[in-house]
Length: 230
View 1 (tube, rainbow, N blue to C red):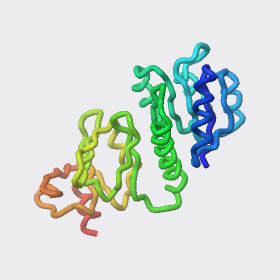
View 2 (view 1 turned 135 degrees about the horizontal axis):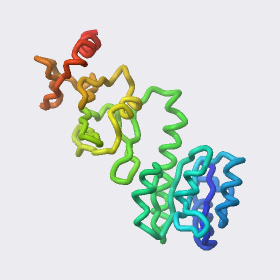
View 3 (view 1 turned 135 degrees about the vertical axis):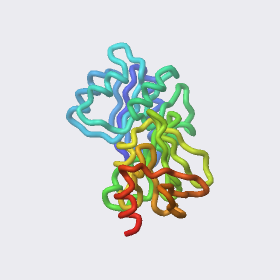
View 4 (view 1 turned 60 degrees about the horizontal axis):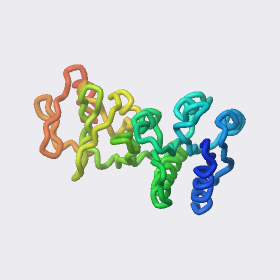
């Protein structure tokens, strides 16, 4: 089970999270705190997997509290203020529950946390079959087999997928390459990453994938052709 704590200055809000966690088979709620300072002390001594964290608290905001933690955990914001959603996204929150939220919406957030928790705890043991990307204020699971190619758009990447709409995410090419298995994906241009499995043919410094043309950069050509031919 996922070990969690809840932090909120409003007692009724804590009671609701406590009730919902009790109904969930995935979450073990270890403690609740209505005083953020006590939660910070607890977190310095105890490692948990997930925080249910209110944003707008009088002594310290949930955003500032999270930034002070010595180790990062999965984070689900619980707040009545939608304007904090962007900041929550920047802090890599798993989800953002807008008060008042239902048990069904709570379950959706827990499902995301559970999936990411399982991924994070098994990725060192099993061959990678999927990755998680943050886009549209959500944590999106992408099957590696579905990636046709990845294109850089300044500060964003567009991930082209098989029979799906492209996903646009704010992430660098370097960071993306770290998530992808080296044996299956390769950077072939300053603006393109391709998977070997979907390459149909290569001609005149051009890779053909699903009817699309991907250029091969001059500085990448030798290494790409050597790896591709092998």
